[in-house]
Image 1: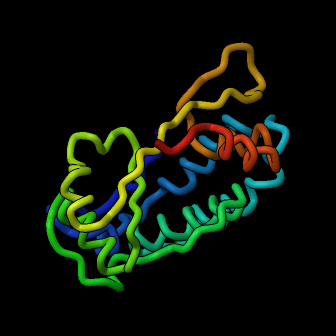
Image 2: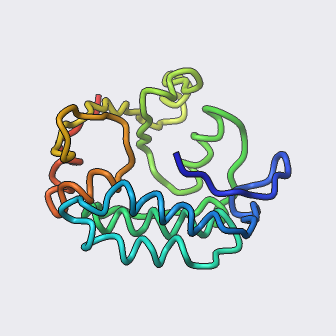
Length: 176
């Protein structure tokens, strides 16, 4: 597990969360390198990942955005990216999701199974928002060792499967 040290201020947005400088970038890169340098596609992805992690991002939000955009590209996922700060979004839990859909003029919303505790599908339906559940089925892929280890990061998949990673991601679940 790699984490980025930040200045904590309860209630602040990720975009306002400042990254604390230090040697964590070198430690993270060394950990990734030690874990994956023998992986078949390490040389394909590591140089760009190294640039991303080494970049002196000031805020966690901008770093997250850069990493997400890179992962979308590497996994050949084409989707529209919307930024919440461009919209007036109100409410909490389901009300916030409804507000997001109304503000962005979308009438469908996709959640993962972990959101069942706070998504009120009936309330969404009353606001003419169709809710869908993403049912994730963890794919198994070659990791270079005998026993498969699930729930690792996307870089594990990319370093081990390369361009095939996009196809693997598309096959690992369905929408209900």
